[in-house]
Length: 234
Image (cartoon, rainbow, N blue to C red; front, side, top):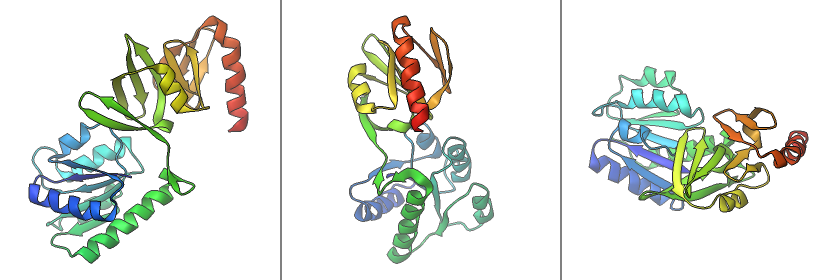
């Protein structure tokens, strides 16, 4: 799981981080000082712990923005104020945790949140969805393979187009192709597409839900055959 903790008080962020890492030491925990900082992170969060009263976008506004791009995120408000509880229902919040709270209460909420995350379809056959790690700038980013719409390469820079934004990094498209698996196809030396997001195609271009990719003339026949096989299997 990828867990976000968003609170403008460092003491609270650190306290929640310790509790979460104690429960889920192998999962990724990211800390944010504001809603804007969280929303500027292109990574898809699975569980979000949100304070409500923060500088810039407050927790409720942040939750609404998260819902626009991630319907399955488990949202938990962690706040000292109970006057937003009804608004929390409007954004599909999983829980509204009032400060102060004891460890037992927090652990119960997190256990139920993790269960909700699993039952929502984010985890398949008892394990997390497949992903790749890429190095973009100074950050290491986990990219869910099923969220990749297509990728393209320019001057050794790969651009991965996902459902939630674009990620750029230096690499080889052949390595990404190998990691992505059988549901992806290389219609052109500069493109790698996910069959899942194909909308339409002709002999020169493949239109996807987000953007388009060129197709080499000599690849067209094989692409059609592989795509029809994908459709049959799914």
